[in-house]
Length: 154
Image 1 (cartoon, helix red, strand yellow):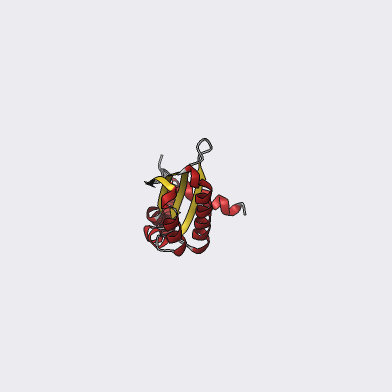
Image 2 (cartoon, helix red, strand yellow):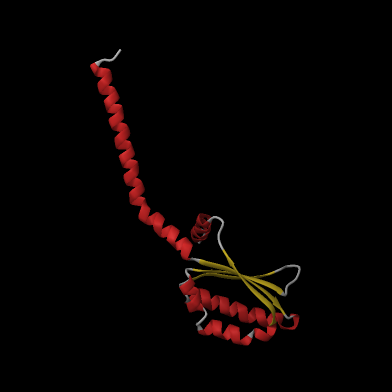
């Protein structure tokens, strides 16, 4: 049975539902610039893994030069997010470097720095092989959480 009171309650429920939808839409629209910036930052980042094999006789000298280059890059270049050199435990001449740059432009600027130039000019005879592998994150949002977590641990 339809009564005036029931009709008014149904209208009120419909009105509340529309208001709720409008508020949710406005919230989404308010957050869009931040989401867009995050997505754009993710798409501009450059991630690479350098796979390097070092001539055994030069391993210690190479690691010293690499450590200095990585430290200078992180300290002096705002566009260098990470340069993380590692070596395989079972074969220490197998070096891997995780490189993360804010953008391709940041990477290109990195290549022109004095510390990188020194690294590139002093190590060629030490390198048996070099392969640069450009990477893409499977889940870019997780990378952001990783860096946020590192900040929280400070």
